[in-house]
Length: 328
Ligand code: 8YV
Image (cartoon, rainbow, N blue to C red; front, side, top):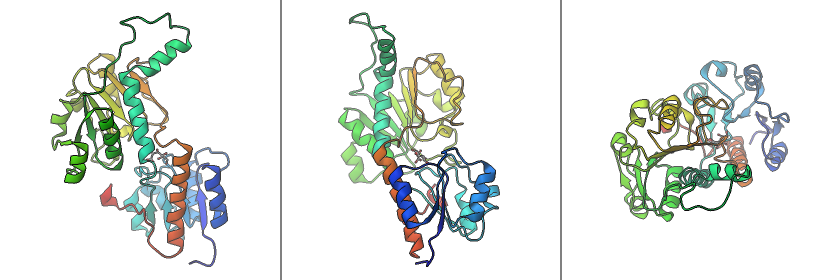
């Protein structure tokens, strides 16, 4: 173990207990303002830190990594998605990159179910009407949504989060379908009674609800292109709690506007925090401000994962949550 405490620079405000523990364990520089660091501030942090603890709001590309000092050995990301860090460029400079898998799986899956229910049962619309004093009494035909029990859910990306969504959805009576690079193990397929589609196009054309759970990589950028979105049935609902870049948002907004698909529930956007103006104001789109992992418990667990990765590295071992470019 290094005799001195490593210099750890944290780019955003983290939950109190996480920041306190990091101050106890490391020579930690915190960001009390919670403003995202500018590119120049990030470059400065990379030039001084032994360990950088960034988040999704820090774009760490190859050009920025040129500014890293030779002492920088670890980028311990607070979050599981790692598309904002050029992992290959970091590794080429001898910098290990870690993330926080596992601890936000259940929270993200919960939010996915909340979005499915919100869109299918018009929950946000109903709440807004009621708050505005627009509830004038029950009627047999007002504010009808759609039943989800018995419908088909197509999951794109059957990793941890996709499987956690599948378990919940099965309990809601949905039939599970999925598209993934490869089928899940026979045990999991049996537990979930899941149908595997090697053709995404074929699956899209047959689902009532589609939910995106793959990482954003060059291979999944605009995976749901205008052409593929047009394969969805007019009554279909599309949910995205993964990354905005996976869907062509403009094409999606146009299909929602024209009623060519029934609804969408989106927690992530291609140019966060900017929202595609074509999505704003659509009555059949429920939009959330990237809340997938936003529970107090989840964010503390994420912080603890960051700490474990740093401590393991400090002790001279390989951190448990190393990101390997081929995994992405
Ligand atoms: C995180 C997320 O809160 O972990 C992820 O991939 O999308 C979020 O839920 C965010 O990435 C923090 O960096």
